[in-house]
Image (cartoon, rainbow, N blue to C red; front, side, top):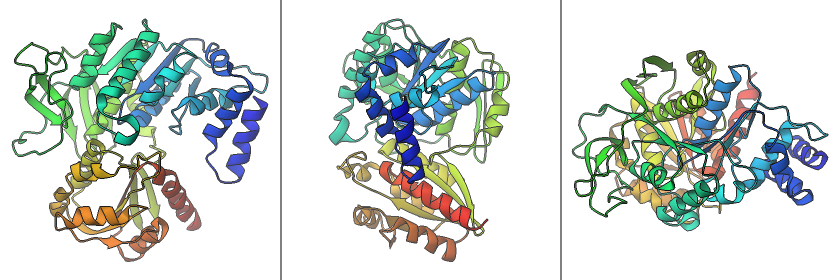
Length: 439
């Protein structure tokens, strides 16, 4: 405990993130520390898994539980591998190793579940979705599904709260043998989808291999699916979002409860719904959920808002085709003229294969009221080439801080910054610094 806390403190005062290092040191000294600390959680442990939306869903669930007057352990920063999870528990415990927590909300990387579950058995798993992500790290999506299935077998009593609109996640929950409930958006929202060229992961039925068909879909493979051959289909939704509105804010009804949030981005309905479903499954009343949503401030680059020298800035993570396409939709919902910065890195945590850029529908930016697009990061030239192929001009500026300063100085005072994984922390810090300098 002393070593973990000292490491975390040293990293913070030197301006480094340091969360995973603190956990690594703690586990090196005591390999059972995570098992010991998690065993002190008084009530329930949630884990949140899935390709997109983990951090937002997990942090929102944590805030909802805290609003019930409970103490929660949570890895807010999104450090979701074994070392990061160990650090979250260690940082919340006292120097003597006492953890006073009612619940734990832990975001877990899908590939890390089989390393983390031997240390504790969660009571609930929230499974947001399964998309293709970092092929050089995860491989094809079947590999991720097999790892998650193995993890579920390690915790056979764990209840899975699964996105019923995703055929891959639903199939996995059904096949696991674990108890499960579903959440999803039961009504068609987007009326005209005939010309969509989106990449869909669940093209073929996991049960029989036939081509899946849809009554309607929301984006990527999420929607009301069915297999005409074997009968596999979207199950009845336990938590069914109806009367959905998306635009400058989000609203919907679920099981008779009206929910509103001052967020943008249709995909955030799934995150808000998933957190609500998890809380209700654990027996929480969630009477203050709308108040939590009003007060909840996204952090760590998940639709995080800044205001610098008269410019409104939104920072968001975009790390795979499905996530990037939803970011494009969110940007297009803003009808005002806007500048855009896209940062692409290819460090090991990002995935060194950036061929996924060619699966993103960047051509939609042509009619989105874009004043300028700046490309930045290690693979900025790849990004510029990708835009050139759809006849979209861009400004090349590898230095993200200079790119931001240029757009604040010469832009239209409405800026979106989309970054993949390793650019997120640095860009967040730059924006925080620039915001602080004006005070």
